Amino acid sequence: MSISRLLPLLLLFAGIGAGEAAAQSQEATRRPVALEETTADAEWRSYRDAYREMIRFEKYGRPKQLIQSHLQIVPLERGVPLDGVRLALTGGATHLEMPLDAAGRAVFPLSKPAYDDNARLVLNRKAGQFAFQRRISIAPRADGVYDLVELRAACEQALDFLRYSGQPGMQDKHCVGVRFSYPRQNAEAAPRLRGSERPVAALEDGAPFPGDAGPTLRVATLSFADLPEKGQLVSPAAPVGIAPLFR
Image (cartoon, rainbow, N blue to C red; front, side, top):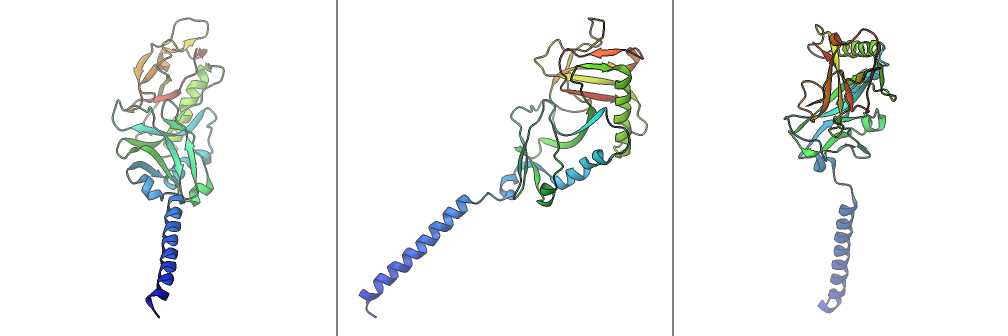
């Protein structure tokens, strides 16, 4: 066959090859980025691992009506802020934004699809700056009024669960108080006894949960030994969190 007759065929096949290459390039642009590509340098944790830990609270059969369980993001170094930190549950067919409160806590979704998808909990921060942990705290009240008998009972419920779940060092601990934490802009939010205008503890800068390198909030640390057996605490502002205290 002459060159003049081959030339149109060569051009046709070249055009098909170029078209296929362009189509493949467009398809690669449209497809989601692989999970490994998005989390290569990010801090992340397996959803399945976290699920196995968090489900213990749901299956716990002893009294727990006064306490709550969250997933918490904790800085590994003191002074690292949570400003701009975002948490997402991400997988091949899963994407869920998980808002963090001022203490770094998120409501943990118990999701079978995410479990089956082998999803990951991913932070928009490089690895080595934050850790993931379960956090047990005392449930806040919408009216801001806390019965002292119930506060003591809530601390005992938290201690019982932590012992049940095998958290190290809890077997010999005792409940000694609670810590109320507030956003930094609430400078005068310290709780007081009902009928009194004096705060039961001064507000200080500190982490919402003792022992954490967590965000700096305004905290009021209350010792049960300094409080009456009965009565009520009134919190003028909604607390970010209420931590049980052990010693």
